[in-house]
Length: 362
Image 1 (cartoon, rainbow, N blue to C red):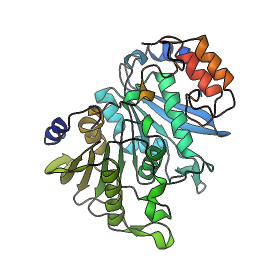
Image 2 (image 1 turned 45 degrees about the vertical axis):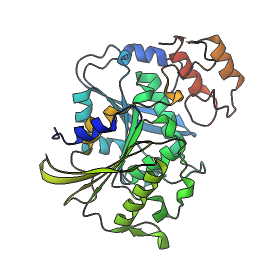
Image 3 (image 1 turned 60 degrees about the vertical axis):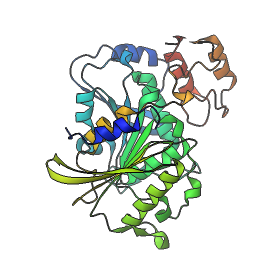
């Protein structure tokens, strides 16, 4: 497993649960002065010609100089980032453990009451391109709030869990680990696992409720959620070259006592699978607390793209005129080295990130 000792993680599991702009650098300086109560920031950014919204949760005592970890938390269908913020439990984890949480809202409107879904399992770039948006959002939050690119994680519930798997299939280098909770699988929605091509092993902790036996999907591809979860697990075991090490059964109390059965698989990266007994289709009780304290907090990515100075394109140890020349020279192209925000082309967002990082690399 990247950045963690699997043995210590297994031992830990036995414990009881307890807009891009040129003023980005100034934004970081202002945010660094926040030092008392937690802060919620309602924000927007332009992406794909559309205004996208998200909420940033800053913990008590936040300082951009601390390079806090970042969790991207994705809501289910017929919901919003604000809805998931209110119900997922991640605000409490942010307060206790000092991490930044971002709650974006999906790009696909559902109905007329201001609710949205994620355009999951869509790899063609068709609008709304939520995969590209989430990549750009991560870069934006890292630039604006100084979060640690090597400690960036993603979790989601239901449609948000499917979006989590969709994102990491394309951008495995942008997150250190994922935790999809009670989400369907691509094969039930007319897609193929051949479309899922993560470029590297990815630590994964998948969750389900034991009562999730209903059928979901599209047309003839529909299948029981139990089968979908089995297929999801098999995919990640194969991709991470992981095998079963142990099964842990424990009773944890998040509101009421429940039995949690977790299968721990280790290999090139960890694959954990938890079934909570007696629960249905919910963001499982205690998931936020457990995912952070037992999994995300133990993992640091090793990808070169999460190095402390990603805007140092020419590798000279500083973000300076040479890097600016490279960005300007690649303006309007798809040059991957200069596409700092990962949105598929070089433009104002990349220049904003470069200016925010200006100076000697840490």
